[in-house]
Length: 194
Image 1: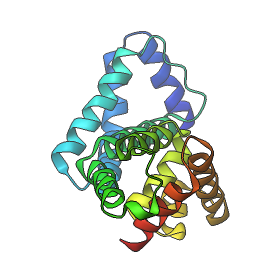
Image 2: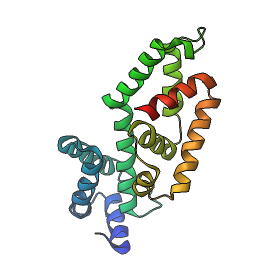
Image 3: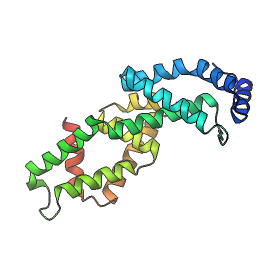
Image 4: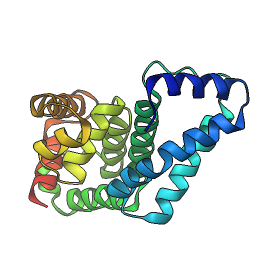
């Protein structure tokens, strides 16, 4: 992997359009980054696409690249954000939202009649998509992928208490942003029962 001195040389080289600096970065970081992506996405072809996208993005933004953390951390953080975006647009995520809408349509006695089910689904999706990146990642891992607090803490390099706090804040955001308490209770119980 790259040393701090080597990272500085690579960043300087990238800003000067030095292709060999880019190649060094790619050779040093692409394989471990690919393994990380594969652990999360479980799809080799998708991982190749994401990896290519990350490095193409670095090359395209090389002259204006301003990294305040280590280059390795920057790459993994970028990969994490891309994974979150994939989860958000993933058909399974969309299926959970559709299942929730169907569930609320079937058991309408739990939800006030004056709120349209489609509108509620859009409100939930909007609130989840507008959460801060880390909170959204934790919430998706918890509620849509049914991972334990301990597993999420390991994946995100946070303490279990921080993960619990983020989940609580996410649920509070859902409560405060256009969603009635009844809808939120159905939403959370729906995902706990799955």
